[in-house]
Length: 438
Image 1 (cartoon, rainbow, N blue to C red):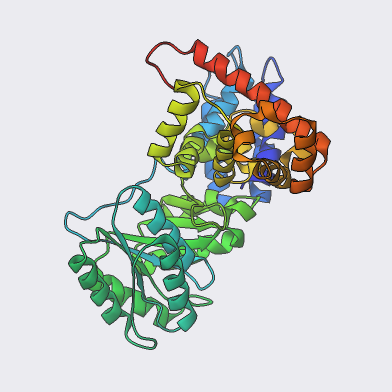
Image 2: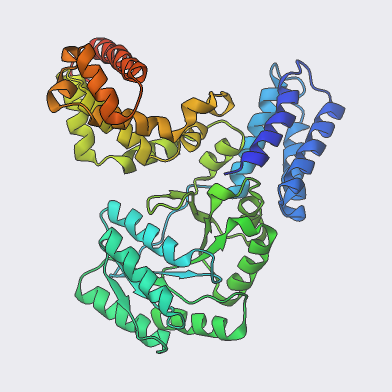
């Protein structure tokens, strides 16, 4: 997400950061390069111009040129304006005073509406909300079956109308069922087309009139760039959408749609899809997204991913065992490694850690296969060996290597790393004040 834009912006701003003194011509030249980078990233021309006008007005306001660290001040101004461009505050959903809260998802065919509906249902379920999905795309049998399949995977009921029937009737019936089953949220997956047409908009307007939804989320494929902005305008004019969900952000290195769509429509980006898994839906926090673009990290996003990967009860149990009792076995090591894997690809996680995006790691260390090799080695051990690796002698190491299909040298390296990590855990426990936990 934002890789190309991030690298080019960092190059331009890095030049300004290195200068001890900045003159007005230097600032203007630097911002001219920023504009070029934004336009190359497929950012809307008007949005880019307005953005640079605001940055330039603040940068040349008088105090910056005299600043001790003018380069850092410019970066801060760009960060603040990027966050403002993406939204003034962390987005949230509007909830109904009576159940269910109805959230309607709209967009063109292929934009990812159905998968997004399931992702959002799972996310809201983690927050303790009882969700239900409504399949109201009754023109394509595959759409109904896809939602049913996804609903089964996440344990959320799906109300589906009959193929070819009136989607408004199906939507009303879904609301009734949600009320009877005391579901607090109803997510309505609507029909799409390959392009905006009058029959589609009429159908969506009828569903809107029948349900009076609290949220109408426009789902857009981020990889379509400026086309997504034009389509968003069309849906907004017809339905007055309340927010935007950008899908396939993990495949969009430029990020132009994300920066343009709010500037053009004025509608907040509420969620971004960052992968294919049903957990890969992040809140579009403006500060965090601006931090990712400028390679400054997104700590809030990192914490959210950690919370998603391990339930609160699991976190407490793991922490008590490792930091409270001082016990750390290879079984615990394997558990921790699997939690990291559930948080997403290592490349994505590093971009959320401030400063880590600029660190160049060897290609081999970033290879997910290496984690699978470690897992294979640990699973080839007996329960006793995992609990107390000190009993693993030379013959046992040979057996473990054969069982995992890895060289003995790799088994030795893993055991050495585990001993080092265990020492570190003991040091962490000793440094913590009494009664305090991480």
